[in-house]
Image (tube, rainbow, N blue to C red; front, side, top):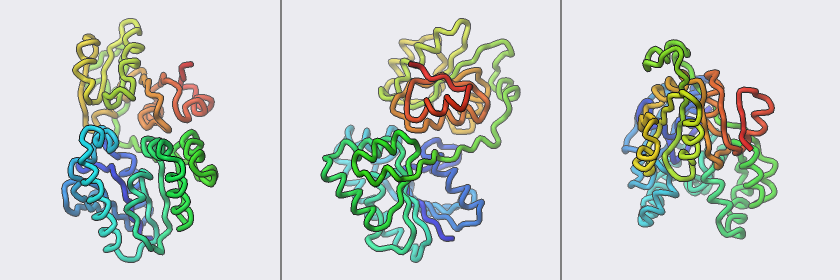
Length: 320
């Protein structure tokens, strides 16, 4: 089957954390025997990695951390770059010719890149910021937009039940959409003993990790406040962003490691005794699922489907 994945976030180099969950899906489809092409913003050109063909299109500074919406707020003129990317992505899809399946990650703006006519089965995946952008748009406009996609046969998938409920406020038909979190791949991550040895963590040290972009919505300050209350704990923060300088000044005992390549970040999680997450905007927090896949307990603020996960997994504690 010929599959094309259109996304506004995808790793442009090995180990890059941005859009890694989309890469995991692409690799899984390739492993299942499908011919997979990814169209995404990045340094222009085509490359093949892990059997996945990637066509990167210049994004004009509109894409990347901390996200399209935040970048547009920083510099509204980047909207022109978004429009150019959408037009170029549509052209790239049309040049691929006959396709069996198109998977669109991030409803807005990716759905705007779809060719006007296509015989392919189209699936659109809503993640979080994109769903909330859709919900915050003028209701009549958002409803017409979704109705047009449904009329052309687009199938919707959401990464959490909470996001599906939010999207259904725009159009009731979305209440019937599929809910499926992105796949998680922690293969190749060293075991706990090896990870602790590799990072110089003593056997009797309590290691607590906080992972995420250092932006206000992630509430990293709240997570660090909680983590630093644990007696004798060594606290490590992984991630970068505009709040880093202020957080470093406020939490002098915390080790700030900055943005790490994905394998390194996963190794730190594997070495830890606890992961703390305070973000309330996540639908299906990837870092929580990664921690649990590595056997690491999690304390998290209530967000997305975490309450339901905690009912099935005693390694997840959700705060009131």
